[in-house]
Structure formats: C-alpha cells, structure tokens
Image 1 (tube, rainbow, N blue to C red):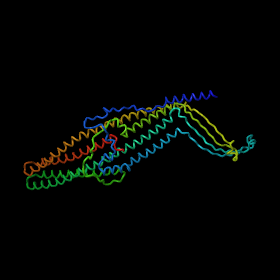
Image 2 (image 1 turned 30 degrees about the vertical axis):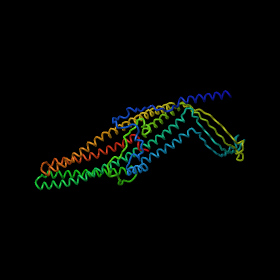
Image 3 (image 1 turned 90 degrees about the vertical axis):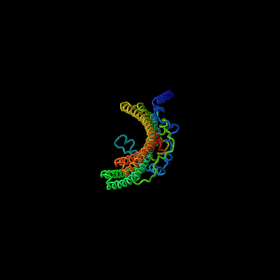
Image 4 (image 1 turned 135 degrees about the vertical axis):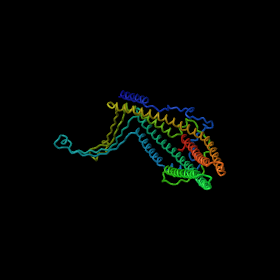
Length: 465
C-alpha cells in the first residue's frame, strides 16, 4: 500500500513538472524603436511629455464643444454597444475563472419497483422502494496548465474589449471636435460669401451704369452677373455643408438632427506646446495598440490550451448521500454512502482533430502578432504625418494670408483704375475671383491645421480619458 502511494505521488509530481514545460508565459517580442518610429524633422517638436495624455476636457477649451463631447460619450450608440460587449466579456471571464472550481450537484430521488411474482427476484424480494439524497462532485486537476490558460485567455478578451471601448471613445471625441470646427469653418465661408455677394451686387450696379454710359460693353455686365451667381452657388454649398455637419454632430451625440450652437470665432484655441513624447508610450496610451497586444496574448493562451489537449486529463469524482428502501430508515446512519473515483482520459482516435485545432491556433497567434506590429507601425505613421502637416500648414497659412492681402489690394486698385478708365474689366473680374478663392482656401487651410491637431491628439492616444 505504501509502495502504491509513493508510485502515485511520483507520477503526479512528474506530471506537474511536465505541465511547466507545456504552458508558457507570454513575453513581448515586439520592440519599438524610439529613434526611427517617428519621422519628425521639426526641431521645435518636443519629446519630454505627451499631450495625448491630456484629458479631453482640458485639451479642448471651447465650453460648447466640451458639452457636445460629454453628451456624445454618454449617448453615442457605438459607445453603448461597446459597453455591452465589455459586459459580455466580463461574464465570459467569470465563467473562465470557474473552470478551476469543482462542479457540485445535488440530487434527490424516490422510486418504486413492482417485480413479477413469477420470477425468483419477485418471490424473494417482492415489490421494492428506494429513496436517495446526495451530492456529486467532480474536479479536473490542472496538471498541464490548460485551465489556467483558459482563465488567462478570457481575461485578455475582457481587457481587449475594454480597450476597444476606449478606442471608440477616443475616435468619437475626435469626430465631434472635427465636425464642430468644420462647422465654424463653413460659417466663416458663409460670412465671406455673404460679403462677396453684397460687394458683387454693388459692382453689378456700377457695371450696368458704366454700360449705360457707353464706357463698358454688355459682356462686362454679363461677366459681373456670372460672378454674382457663382458666389450664390458657393453660398448654397456652404449652407448645405453647415446643415450636414450639424446632423453629423447630432448623430454622434445619439440625438435627432438639430441645429448646433457654436463659437463665432474661428481659431484653434490650442495654446499648449507640441509635445509628442516617445514612441514607447504608444503601448500605454493608444487603446487600439493595447487592444492588439491583449488580443495577441489571448491567442497565445489559446495555443497553450490546444497544446494541453494532446495530454491526458485527470479528473477526481466523489459522491456522498443517503440511500434507503424504507422512508423511516432514510436518515439512519447506516443509510450513508460515499464513493470517490480518480480517472485519466487520454485522446486516442481524435488526434488529427486536436492537431488541426493546434495548427489553427498557431496561425491565429501569428496573425495577431502581425496585427499588433501593424498597429504600432500605423500609429507611428499617423503621428509622423500629423506633425508634418501641422508644421507645413503654418507656412501655408502665412503665405496664404499674404496672398489674400495682395488680392485685396489688387481688387481695390483695379476698381479705381476701372473707374478712371485705366484698366479693363477683365482685370477687375480676375482680381475679385482670385480674392474669393484665396479667402476660401485660407479658411480651409486653417481648418486643416486644427483638424490635424485633433488627429495628432487622437494618434497619441488622447481622448478616451
């Protein structure tokens, strides 16, 4: 008996040692190069801090915008769906943790058997009654680490869903801000166009007067009319875009389409230093990058599970209860029964099925690793592009403002020369059209700078906190 116990103990110790070789712990193999992931040539861009870590309510200074963002986070349908996915993952995680616990079932039964009087059993025992009450327990020993891997995989799935939710919130914050500033940009375009229309209506009156005086041809009048109509067409486009942007913000807030109150001043309101931090911080700041790594760990654990399926499972079962053929003896101590059973199950005929599943999980792990690497590379590209655009956009805006001022003077000079008869009307028309185009482009370029600042904030992982 002592020899049997020692043999069993040695077998169990051997299996436990083997389990350490089967299940492996995850180790990050992807390295982020802080020297080359970001391609930033602007020496004014700092790497000391990371403004992606600024909470969105401090990043955006406009109180109307922050109110819209808050409403969107609370009511947006994508966020609410993501929250439900997190709840599902929580339930699955709780289920995953329970695999290490024994299953316990209670049972109670009563039976009556009428035996045939024409059989030996019937003659010997007559009719029989039997009453049972008991508890069954079954527990699988985690000798290969499969149950631990199952728990860890479900935990990683939960963390993945939480990061997906954060990524959705981060994108939502950027989308609301983007559409809000587009709205202000379209307001500015409308303001420019209304002034242009008024100016062109006055110019048309002057042109008609000069035509009647015989100083201009009918062609000049028609060209003035065409410029006026062109401005009105652009105004309709601007007003259409205003309503579309309002509808977009309403949708993001989970509300019916309605007008959106906004600031009348078109400026960026971002008075902080452009600081992008170090690329390694993307692993902590960007929810999509973190989600990709958590998904990688989850697939890594599923490989551990698939590998453990090749080995036998050890299960211990036990039951205890009361059994009697008479009701009055049911709770008699002699009615107590108990049994315990240990069993090991080794897959034999389904090895190909297990191997196929193992091969699939290995490929899924490789896919998850590639996706993780891709997300890091994409994050580096987004940060680099946004910093480049912001930097170059400053130069564009400075030159665009100078261009607008030159066209304003050109319009003023050409109108004076036209009245004095020293210029033809084509010069006036060209100067006016160039001024309008330059002013609209200037608004768009300022909008590009603001939206790239928002995009950079998102690329650095800002917006979810």
